[in-house]
Length: 115
Image (cartoon, rainbow, N blue to C red):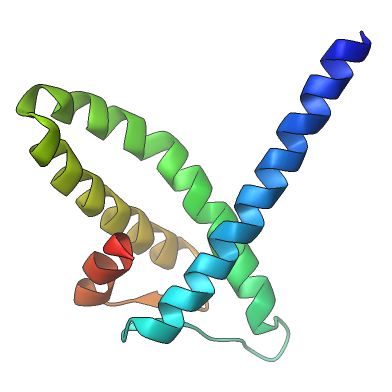
């Protein structure tokens, strides 16, 4: 039982670290990539929008990415690499569509997928 608890706590800690790193990466990408922006309204601060976007982006990637990359595998590693960037762009667009305060333009989605 102790081993299971330790394993679960390591998993939770890893997920939290990845979430924070994703949020910092999204904030950095919004500073570098024009057209990728986070806006706060009167009730929700910008940092909450960034954390929410990172969490939602992780969930979207969890569903879409493995399926698309599995289908792209027979095309070779270069095609899988390019398709991986496009999947990231689509995941950014889906996240922006679902989350108010997170805006991604067409070119920004592609460049943001690379960054």
